[in-house]
Structure formats: C-alpha cells, structure tokens
Image (cartoon, rainbow, N blue to C red; front, side, top):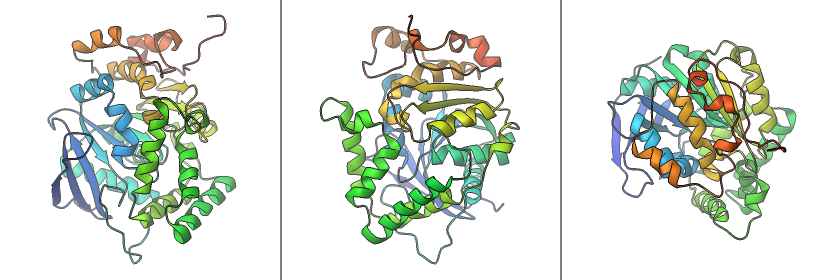
Length: 354
C-alpha cells in the first residue's frame, strides 16, 4: 500500500453540511472526502450508493436535528465519495483503468492513513455498504463497528448482472435519460414514495431526481456500477467479522432478501437487524427517523451518548413519517447492556395483537 500523499482542501459554501472537502491523492487515484466536525473526536466514515454522493445519500439523516446532534456530538464525520462522484467532479479519462471493489476498499484505508485515523465506525448504503464491509474484512483492526443500510454481500446474480448491464448501456448511449433515472429511483425508494403525488415524502424523490439530472460526469457512475457488477462473494468472510454491526433494510428494497441473508450469516452475538416498513433501500433519505433510536442504543455499546438536550427533543417531538418508534422496536434492542454485549436481530414491525 502506498503512503497517502498531499491533499487539496476546497471550501464548500453551498454544501448541506458545514465542513471542508479534501481531494486526497491515493495510489488508486484521487478521492473526495468531506470532513464535518471536530477532528479530535472519534471518526465515523460514510460511503454512498451508486450514482450518489454524500449529500444526496446522507442529507436526510444528517439534516434530521436529533440524528445530527447525536452523531456530531460524538464523532467527526468523514464522508468518502466513490471516485468522481463528488460535487463538480470531472470526467475520468477512458485511459484510466476501472477500479475493482478491492481497489476501492484499499482507497479507504489510504484515506484513514492520510487523516491519521487508527480505528473508525463505518456507515454505508448498498454499494457503499459492500465497500465498507469488504474494507472491514481486509482491515479488521481498523474497524470499530459497521452501520449498514440495505447491504449486499454476494456476487451479483445473473438477474442483477443483466440489469446492471442495461443501466450501463443506457448510460453509454443516452446518458442520464428519464428511463435510467426511473431505474435508479426504483433502486433507492419504495413504490409508495415514488408514486406519491402529494405530501412531503414526494419531495425526497424530486430532490433525488434533480440531483441525478445535474450529474455531468456520467462515466464515473458507469465505472462504479461496473466495479459492483464484478464484485466477489463475501459470505464466507462474514463469520470472521467480530465488530458490532447494525443492519437497516427497507422492507421494499430490491436488496431486502440479500440484506436478510447477510444478517443471518453474521455472528448473532454482534449483529442486529432493523427491518423498516414501507421503505426502499435508501433508509437514510426515505425514513431517517427510523434509524435514530437503534443508532442511539448501538452507540451506547461503544460508550457514546446523546447530548443532554437530546432527551427533551425525543420526548417533545416525533416524526409522523417514521415507521420506527420505541413502541415498535423489539424490547431487547432497548437494553443498552444487550447492545453493549450482544446485538440481536430485531424488526420495526408491531405485532398484530399490540
């Protein structure tokens, strides 16, 4: 592994978060890292899904006041974008080899080395969750815990491989056309929110559509998608992952079955599952409030706690769009002692007799 070289810092005034963007040069090329918070605090790194960047993938979660105060109170956030996915990114030359998933995971460790980070907590969505899981498999000593949203762990099925090839051909021949955007929205969101014509939820889809419409460096999307289409199976390595892991999966996610499979293959002593009703893959945007309480108790297992005003906020406010609340989360999740020692599979469903 090559040593991380110098970076270029860029102030981003119109970003949804306060912080600074760094273009970190690695042995596999430059990668954008947006840093939010006090760098003296423990580190939380994020990695988004295909065609998204940190802003479009995690804005819903980090713009949720309670979640933002919980996470920024305890961590400095390092948002790592896949190569070329950052705001204002340029087209990557066709002469540059397509990075493999192993290359992308190796880039992550070089980013950690550049910032002097020894251990980190990881938060990734679908393709990003795969990259961070692979990173945890390869560099176990660098990972404290994983928060995975609609994760995947197996090599692509023939159906997924063919589907991705269709997306790649659409990108190549038509660019970010309406049909391609529809396919991507199906990947991210549930049918309920995609078909909604009224209410605040539809704004989430409209914002994502606008973001995809503004993508200029389309070949970088194809490169990330191609890397994911060539990914290898991590199933046999999951039992060797002993870091605490919290998995969220939307009930309507196209990756629901694989996320459930991944949860079942991991050590039940360290892995908890939160299944979110009426939600697609992008739980961070569609139902960020559903993540709040599970993350809070998950972090207690690491000795991280919410700021004092956070208690009042939880008591006085609720989200009508969230399918997750204290009344519908399995009792074992609400035990900090359990989360500190053993994480058990849970669901956000309410039993019919309740």
